[in-house]
Length: 109
Image (cartoon, rainbow, N blue to C red; front, top):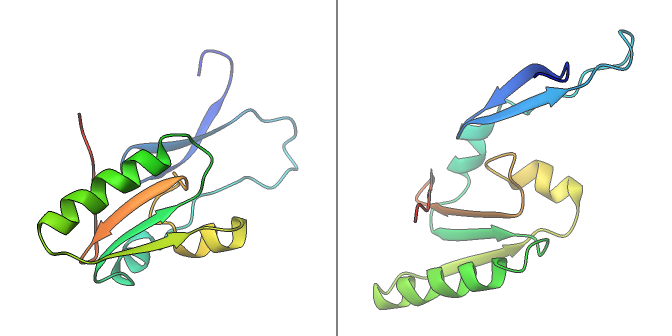
């Protein structure tokens, strides 16, 4: 903010969209507004992931190990492109999401 960025949108889980305006005429970016609808699509334990981070595989393995102990089946969805991410991701953070029965799972260490 101190460098003249402007907050123009917010999304669940404390995501904020900041822009540095280069022109008053440019179309502003925005977050989708259907986050709850996206979550409702997933009934089972579902992991959405794209391999943009080296920790995605480890996080996936940890969730699967825990789910196996609880006899919970895990569905993996590897996001292949931007269109798929924009259609399915329940948050602006499109690298990794875990959803259980329509609820986004937050992992805090």
